[in-house]
Image 1 (tube, rainbow, N blue to C red):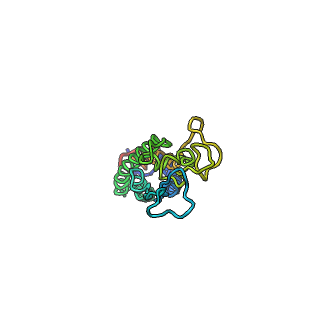
Image 2 (cartoon, rainbow, N blue to C red):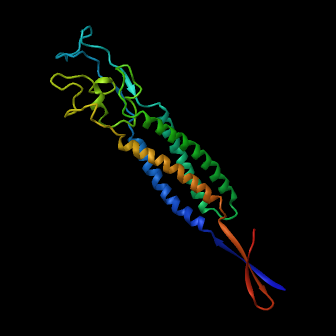
Image 3 (tube, one colour):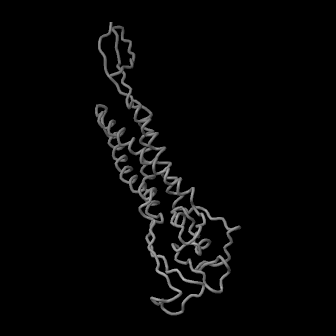
Length: 252
C-alpha cells in the first residue's frame, strides 16, 4: 500500500541545448546586422556622360561633349526591404526566446509568444534568403548599355565591378573612357582588365549577409523544435509500507 509521495522535476536536455543555441543566436544577430549596414546601399549621382574627348574646361551648358548626369540608388529594392524587415524580427525573436528560457513551468504564454514570433521570423528570413538568391543570380553581369540598369546596382557585385564594366554603365563613377588607357579599362583602376580572363566574385559583405540569413533561418527552425519539447519531466517518488521507494513518471 502506498503511504506518501513527493514530486520531482528533471530538466530536459533540450532546455540546455536551447540555452547554447541562444548564445549562438545572439552572435548571429550581431554579425548579421553588421553585414547589413556594410552592404552597398549608397545613392550616387552618375558623372555626366561624355564623348571620347574629355573636356579640359568646365562643362558648358550647350557644349557638344556634355550630357546631363542621373541619380542612381541601390535602395528601395527587394533585398533592401527584406534586410530592413528581418532586423526588428530578429530582435523580437531574441526577446521571445529569452522570455521562454527564463519563464517558469507554468508560464505557457511565453511558449505561445515564442511560437508566434518564431513563425513570423521564418517568413521574414525565407523572404530574405530569396532576395539574396536573386541578387546572387544576377551578380557581376555586364550591362547591355548605358541605359541598362539591371545589373550595375546589384549589391552582390564585386568591389571591382566598375573596373571591368565601368565603361558600360553611368552608375560607376569611372564610367568614362580616358585617353591613354587600354580599351575596356577605366580610371582609377590600374592594370589590364579583360572580360574573357577576369573573374568577378560576389563581395565579402554580401556573402556574410547571405550566410547569416541562412543561419538565422536554420536557428529559428531548431529553436522552435526544441521549444516544442517538454522542458521538465515530472516524477513522483512513491514510498511503500515496506520502505521501498520508486520514481514514477507523471504527465502533470
